[in-house]
Length: 237
Image (cartoon, rainbow, N blue to C red; front, side, top):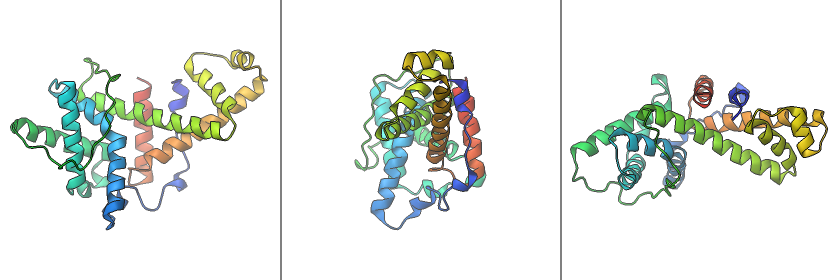
């Protein structure tokens, strides 16, 4: 991704009145389960990589532990203990993961937890573990890359559905390499001022989608800003 595209921001007034995490206290068990499974979908990749790197776990063992961790999250009140004044939610989740792994390490003969409460499809075939990064760095980097990939995927679908695929192609070409507006205009057979306008529009929409996704699991506008700064940091490594 082009470094310019990680400088995300957004309208602070767009922050929802009821944060996503607050909704987890819903009295409706079905709604709570849906939200918890959404949490699992957002975070299984960082969790899996952290587990793989922590004690050199095998792929299958790391997958099992990932499933067990989220089963425990769903079946317990761990999330209700989160206090935004004490730091970012993803760091809170990382702490819960450390505690879970410490317990698992002490109890090698542990029973499967969660009773099959959730099964996450873990597509780990193409996932690599960089031996030069710590488990903490892998966790945060996977969070950043996953969040941006999901936002880009949604952006592409939205633009195609709206008949604006050309706008996304211009933006994609700009980010894929050090490509000039003139080169993109020639390759897409459109005026150069259209390229400039397309990239600006798509960049703004991507920013909005990133803010929307971050807003799902933070508790204040300040936390959105902090997460966006961390996102830029990790994507510009």
